[in-house]
Image (cartoon, rainbow, N blue to C red; front, side, top):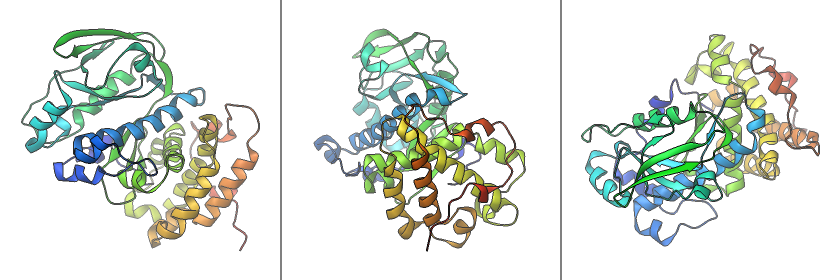
Amino acid sequence: MEYPKRAAAIAGARIGRLACALLAIGLLGSAPASAAAADNPFEAIRETDATLARIGFRLATANASLCDRLEPGLGLVLHTPSQYARGARAEAVRHFGFDGPVGVEAVIAGSPAERAGLHADDSLSAVGAARFVTTDPQAEASTAALIDVTAGIAALPPDAPLTVEGRRAGAPLAITVHPVPACHSRFEVAISAGFDAQADGDLVQISSRFLETYPEDQVAAVVAHELSHNILRHRERLEAIGVSFGMLSGLGRNVRYFRETELQADILSIALLANAGYNPQAAVRFWRDFGPKRAGGILRSRSHPAWRDRITTIENAIAALGPERPARPAILGDRNSPLKGEWEALIARHAD
């Protein structure tokens, strides 16, 4: 995992060019893209975003009782016109029917938003006390507006009824949604040919390549690992002890702290998967494929435990799961304490 300094820094180029969106066609792992997605890059983007949102919503709501930072779980996948490159923005506005500052890109099946009657391509001007403003239509592509929108919604009470205001097919819209508590995190796909996953306390971002390559339960294992970093407040705890990030994370004193956070996230992710009804063995299957192919590199091998040892640690965490749900690993009790760098106490070594 790489730790971005702030969400905007890693999100601003999500769709820099419409051509990049073509990478999304044919994604979704074992689930083939719909005919609409195969014919239209905007629909490919919608399907890809909705897939990650569905996984994230499932994990975030099933594990709400483990989280000390909550937000309203609505089941809405939102986007703004300013996310799209200026050359493609007018086409995006027509395709998605934007009639306001925020659009509903998708609605998660079975969510509070679906039960309330919200639809894809509704346009929103407010959710509860969070009011949305129109951005400069000529601005460079950026997700800054979306970050502001989601932060405003996240600050609302996690389980109080919210009135959603906007427009549908040109007519005013006002619908009351009864959200469910969800762990605080925004989930985002980065359209990319590489394998990247990161979290910064507010955001979980994975590259589209994961969705293209792995089935949903194994993608969920990646997302659960990143969400675990947020739940355990790793970014702020690493900053508090003054470690170096990026390429320097694999050097000097940094190593032991990053290894500690990686192993903690591996262990907690198993509980998150089980609590959400995923088979946690999906994490083992993912690492058995991903590890020998893509977990190399000198610096990465220093800041991250060896993939074989991670598998053994994960297998031990699975074996330690009891029958009660939600499972609550003991490491949750340390999330407000300074990191100690004692990663060797967490790891289970692979037997050669």
